[in-house]
Amino acid sequence: MQIYAVITGDFVGSSKFDTITRDHLFGSLKEIFKLLETTPIYGVDKPFEISRGDYFQGIILPEFALEASLLILTQIRKYNPDHFRTGKRSNRFTPVADLRLSIGVGSISYSKDKISESDGMAFWNSGRPLDKMKKKAPRIIMNTSNETINSELNVYAWLLDAIIDKWTIKSAEVINYILSGKKQFEIAQILNIRQPSVNGRLDAAHWAAVDKLLHRFNQLMKYFPYDSNH
Image (cartoon, rainbow, N blue to C red; front, side, top):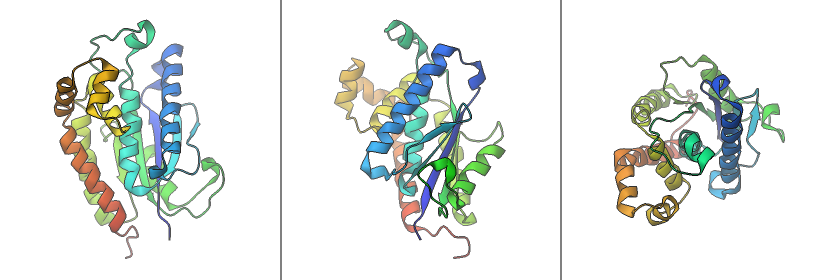
């Protein structure tokens, strides 16, 4: 049986965004969805969908679901309204926008061209936990039908969130570029900074630890059983 991951997400406090901020953030979200949809490694065969104003879903290969979720999250958390409105980079520190994301892994029993018309365990494992998320929950939660795996994934979620919580706009920016496949020297050219500065920002964001967690998640999704009955 083919196993999939469904990523479900929504914005935190989107009702407080002004029109300019909202338009830019949703435009930026669509850009990252396009990247995921056109990069074969992610296995996306249906376009991500945005509905209910700030709610979105996408289907992806399980082993890359956490990587894709971080790519989406950093795309939003790197938004700098000062840079967007003036064209100049500012020293704004704290991200002004954030997301809640839920990764659900499982089968898809009913598949249509549109994600909103599809159904199955992967959707249930993703959508329901997001609806139940509390304010104190990690930004990214992960759920399968195997409770043993879920116990491990819950530890990942809390440890990862502790790291994400310290990320500045600049941290999110360099990690977003790394996850997009950019090399450090390329990022330095894009940001007009020295390569050691890029490396310093990655160190401050604990990228080495996050990278190891992504590798572990990838292996777990590839080789562990998903059905709690097996």
